[in-house]
Length: 202
Length: 367
Image 1 (tube, chains in turn green, orange):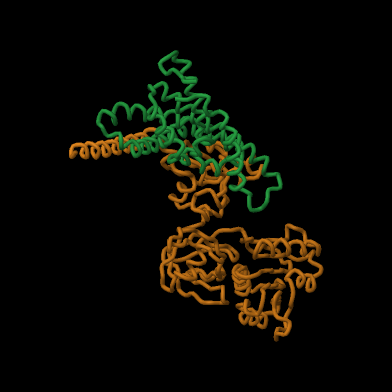
Image 2: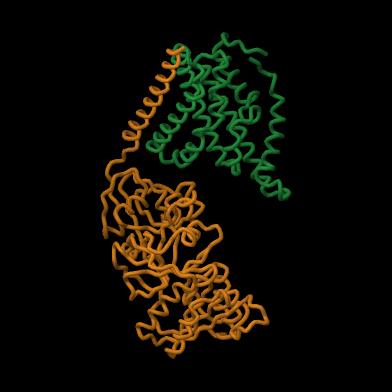
């Protein structure tokens, strides 16, 4: 199935969202954002917290980076600077969001805030922005793509967190405990996500 | 070509400046909590500080030193205090270090409490007396192969007032890529010597501060510490005392003993000191001298790993067994313990088995 990006706006957004979240799952298909995933996925609630922070940041940085890319980098003919520009924008955005959350809601800061510095230079977030500009999106679609990529990461880390909580009580051989068994779990899960591939293609 | 390079450089500079400016502006506008007051112990002291900082740092800026070994990173949990009002709830960094009781009592790690409004806190009164001292290493003397005596002459302030048994927090400086840390060491000199502090420091393999003391710090070097801290000191009554220590746990006991001698103590004291071999004993001559000079003191060193064929005539075996042999009935005694957590737990078990109520056991556990 080939999504008609010029067709019904809602359908195209939904398709972009689903493809980013499932077929192109940034964690399980692209293997990006693995380090915070290994570090935080010991518990489901921490996984959800970090996943939500990543989702929030990918969504908005994809949109901001889209604007910067389309309206500054391309017209100035300096698209080759995208890597460095994107990462600086992401870092600044994360700082800004952290401050805003801290000021606005202490409760949200407690649950989300401590994860934000962790993901400032996360490859999943940079990867989302870099994948986004390889596709012919408009602003809204870039937004949907960022949201989908982050949401896919959220799903993946939550599932991994749940499995790890359960594995914790199992008799895992000593040498495989911790990151070892987690990488095996992630590998098996990414095999499972292979079934989604090919469902949607750009 | 040249213009392309110029454009890209200009763009990067402009981009960086714009973002940095935005962040600075945001920090000033968003994270400006305005002036806050800190009310300590129901108005005993009221501080005016700028909001936005953490409570531990804000108190330190005003010369109130809360114990902290990790320097505000939320890993040592020494900086606990009660935040009665205005501190919000404990965050995920703090909760692993707090019991259910403590959370109900509004105990927080002060380094994790950001000042965003007026707060009311409660701290133990003796923390008001804690100061930061600058001094110089007067001497560094080897006691055993892994233990040194460090004597710091005070410069600013020039005098310290403490109780025998309290400790200081020595601040190590960065060296060979290791960060600066603060570590607690008991004072071994008696309170009557108020122009210097002495400590006994045992080398912890790979320990940041002890390695610094052993390998970097030299005589005459400047050092900084804060103190005195701790609630480990002799209580009042005239009950016979049992002192139990191992390794550098000698320090607070040695301070107490010298303090008792100077104040014409009459309480009977038995001091059980545990070590591996004869080579791990120190201050033995001083302690034997004290034994001869007074009629209230007995020193009972016990070696757990001394070769059986050696010339050692004193006690052998685990310190706990030696205590039981010498003092099977402990109901009327008071015990002061200082050493590793394992030694203290074992000693508390044999002492309470001998009839000692738990409120007559006092200890200073260090890992």
